[in-house]
Image 1 (cartoon, rainbow, N blue to C red):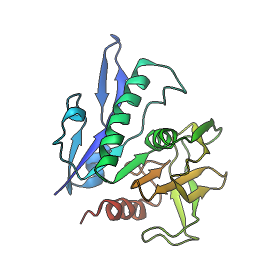
Image 2: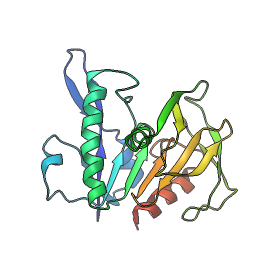
Image 3: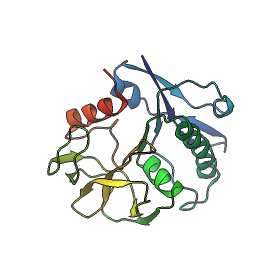
Image 4: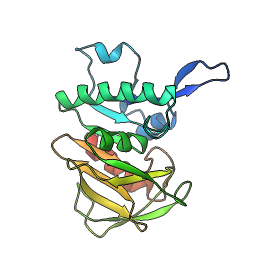
Length: 204
C-alpha cells in the first residue's frame, strides 16, 4: 500500500493556540487505497522517514502575502518537506496553496485575482499530460484569491482557465504536479480528476 504524507493546515484557536487541521476529505478521496500520514514536528528530522508521495495541501496563505505566525510556520514546515521529497525523488502533488508555495520556492510569483473563488469553471488542457489530451475541457472548483503571476521556470503549463489563470502545471525533473483546484473537494469532472491523481501517484 502506498504511503502519502500530507501537510496539514495550521490553525489558531480562540485561545491563540496553534494546531494542525487535515481535511477528512482526503481520506474519502483515496478510498483506503493509501495510508495517509499527517505531518508532526519530529517527522522532518527523521532521515528514515518512509513515504511514497507528498501532498502540499490547501489552506493558509504564504507568509509573504499575509504575515501571520501560522503562515510563517507553514512555510517553514513545507520548505523542509519539499526539500526532503526533492532529494529522494518522491512525487509531489501541490494543491492550491501548495502550488503557490512550490512556485514561489523556485522563484515564481503571485498576484491577487478577483471573482475567482467559490466558483466552478472550465479549464483547457494545453499540453498532453498522462491520459489528458490537449484540447480537453475539465470543470473544476476554485477556492483561491491569488493566482500564479510568473510561473517558475521549473514548471510547464498543462492547463489554464478562461480568465488566463494557470490551473495545472508540472515540473518534470522535480516530480511536482501543481493544481490550483482542490481534487479532494467536489468537482464537476471528479471522475477524471480522481483518475489523474491516482495515475500520477501510481495507485491501483
